Image (cartoon, rainbow, N blue to C red):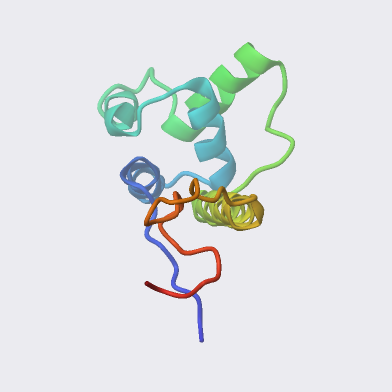
Length: 128
């Protein structure tokens, strides 16, 4: 049975659309995210055709990144899709760990004389 791939969150989907709309590479999207840019506002920055003194958006992002971080590109560049896959895998791993912790926790038994156990299940596994 094949795993279902979840759709990216709305925030990540905005970055995917911005990457396509403004012809950005995965590295440039990664830099823009680290700089705290808003994907919806990139169009305001990317109007170098009407205003020739402005740098094109990819070059502008790279220049800002170099000014702030002192390096030309991030060490590890991940695409938005790969980042979503890793986050989903991490979330699923945490879910499994929590479920195992709940399953292996000792169960409390109800005081003698009470009709039902505290856990909602009978200690013997049989239903009443």
